[in-house]
Length: 429
Image 1 (cartoon, rainbow, N blue to C red):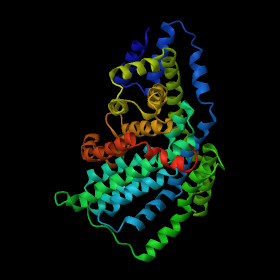
Image 2: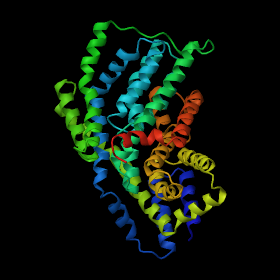
Image 3: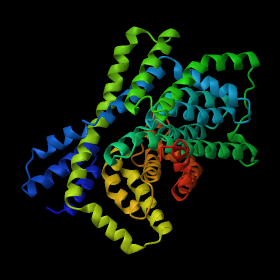
Image 4: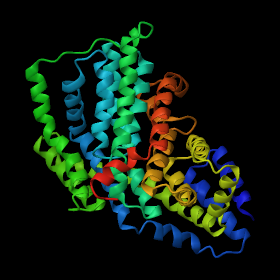
């Protein structure tokens, strides 16, 4: 069996609704059997792929997010955002974006952002007079910010499969993540000023200064959490995995101190986190054997030759790669996509003189957009369940926000400084 047949089997299994982990595993199994290769490669590659110390950070950041939700820390971040931007016209829409930026500084999973923030703000925005489809759309679109602002779990995966520093990746995602948030807030501002769309954006709620002060004081301990994670890594005090441990311990202490988290809640939190981690890890391990076969068949070299034969113009080549990644993101989850594609595309782009950190940031940014794009977009389906709206209606309302996200993606792709400035300033290279 050649590599094209393996891809065909993989796509066929995906089309008939087979979970992606099984699609990857079964197509790899078919290839190994037909080519007479030892099947022991499957458990060997799957287990070795998860032995990296860097993967300790991934489940811990997921756990930290669950503790925040149960311990009331996410609600405190929402209150901080309300105190800062809630007074403006479209206040809750701004809050939706800002709290995604704050939440992203603690755990980098877009789906967790959609559930945690959507369950609070979608009903609140609808009750305050926002159109329901817009409320859901801004929630889904802003969830991508949390997967780009450090710590991003996809950055951890990219660094693990390519050997690029996780600390550099985290710092590289800071400006793009902030830009994405600002871009979405500019869109909200435009709607608020537009006569045509004035019904989308009601006036904000001006909270009494005492309430604002109370929210800010209550939220300060939670806002220290991103500083612990990012500051510890940048300062060289802790690794990404060690910062995740500190984040979990600190979140538990905060939750218990506020009395919103009980010791009896912890087993349930651990179990829920374990299920999330398990679903991510099985996809990761299955995609590793698939990626191993691609490497053995020298697919990266083939891709390099094909792309360079099409054009040697960097601008056109990057556009082709972005369109390809956007297409992949519409039917494949970002986790296996980055595991498979990063080792293939990295040689192409480094050969053109691009920095591996910049490559990782725009590649992950691109694939994260797949989480909000039908037909596979996980965040869309989660938001649909929370709001009881169809995915089709949510996607239609999101069309302008897709445009905003794509514009920021193009800036990040073609302006390397956006990804490399902070790592360079911090002496991280």
